[in-house]
Length: 273
Image (tube, rainbow, N blue to C red; front, side):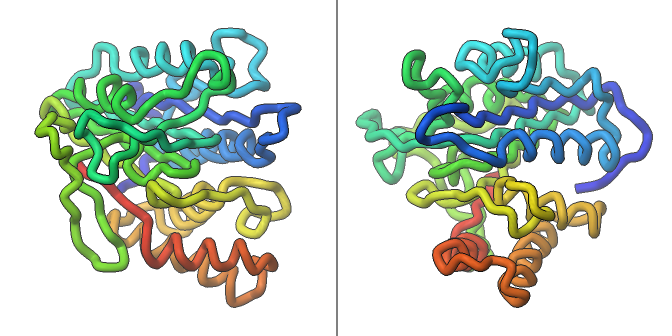
């Protein structure tokens, strides 16, 4: 993972933050996550602002609301007309769910999903759909980095391999059905907030006093401290951020502290192509 100070027109990003305003399951940190990620992409990685598509409930354009249709349309924009050398980013901060499946595509018998703002009426976006939309079309020379800060997000891109940080080894995640989930020659990498069976969290412990996603905050701090880093070093740096917060008692909730310990030492997955 490298930084770039010169803006690059061959870089595109979708930044999607869903807060589910005025609902009992409203999230407080997702808009902040998007703002912080946008700043990071522009200032550290050389993305042009016009090549960053922001989908939040704060956008005035109805086509920029994080609805199911708009997210799926954004996927097509992200992938469209890509050529070798293109660098793509998909960032999602919001709710995620699990769903029993019977097609033999999941080792654990469950599909994972992300929840658009209208998921109660229009439905979720399943891992199969995400894989088909932004993983399978990736051509040779095109790289996708996905960061998904939501519950049950471990294998939400359905990539064929995951990295177990505790064991320090790759784990085969190919579906029992034999369905191909890889790319068309490109490279797809996903950093997820937690394992498929676990919950993610918002916190104010890692990014000043503002609420934000725990994974997003640790990722941004780690990158800002060392922009040129390997993936393994990045995961270690993110864990160091959380360890530091634990030692200084910034994670003042016992439940949140236990969540961080479990997530960072056991179940951060880093699927590859």
